[in-house]
Length: 241
Image (cartoon, rainbow, N blue to C red; front, side, top):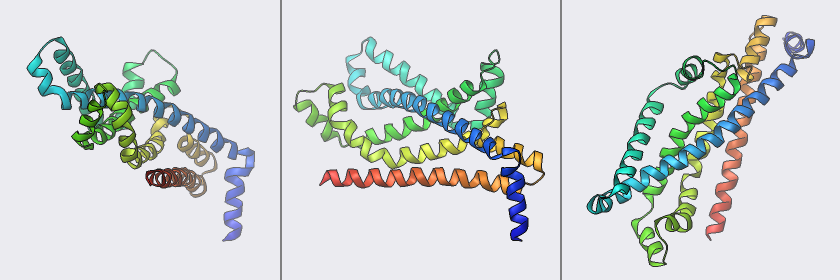
């Protein structure tokens, strides 16, 4: 048994330096995840700001009327359509649409994957942040205004620091989901970690070792993010005392 495992390990990873394929795939996965994460956060913050601003101010703005109300209503409608489409369709389908339809003229599959995953993540990040903003007691907004802040200043100095602490676990969970969702990047020819594991399997005709190695690498990355999340939460709780 041990001899068989040893020979499989040598065949799949040592022979012809196939371990380098996994390393190359891991770097591609991390690169896609990092850029998609930044895109997702940027989109999520903007969408959450629009949605929460509309929810909190629509009544007063409707009474006053004016162009600002219609602009905010239009932006909110666009955000709602975006959230409905992205959250209502599978990630892999969005990736294929982006590659074969929207950006069919481009051969930069890596950039397309980053954008597609970023747009997908942005929808979930937006709802996480919006939920955090809406959970803040209305008295906090009134306290900010009593200190002389306008709505933007109140959000920046009073609300956002509280929202960050509230949504941190949910955001880390979304980041964990994102890093696992990138495993479908091979559908558009990207040699990510999962794709490289499958390539090793196809060359060695041995499925156990490369696929288990891929699963373990993903598991270690998720465990690392979970550990970092726990550390940040403990530090934030200490700062509250």
